Image (cartoon, rainbow, N blue to C red):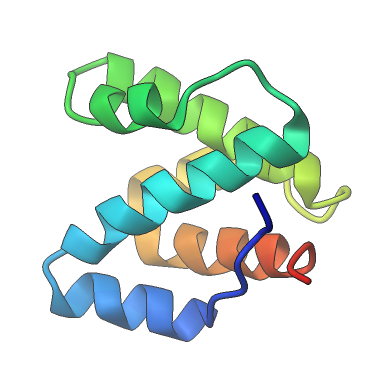
Length: 105
């Protein structure tokens, strides 16, 4: 599956305008891409479901941020991404999408 290039500003604005419904679609889509790029044995569907389960969601977000940090080639730190995701998710989404775009063809 090829990595899809998305405008990071569109991701943030569309997420806010749709009350984060688009963000769920974006999370699922980018989870599949991150899993493929990192050659992980995870499942994007399980990650998406895990977002709705208390405490499991923190683990899912950690694993997601870990994968995003891995593909950033040292530009992002897992802990920083995780903290930013918890405090201000639009910024984390912008950073992660910007890093994923570097793999788009």
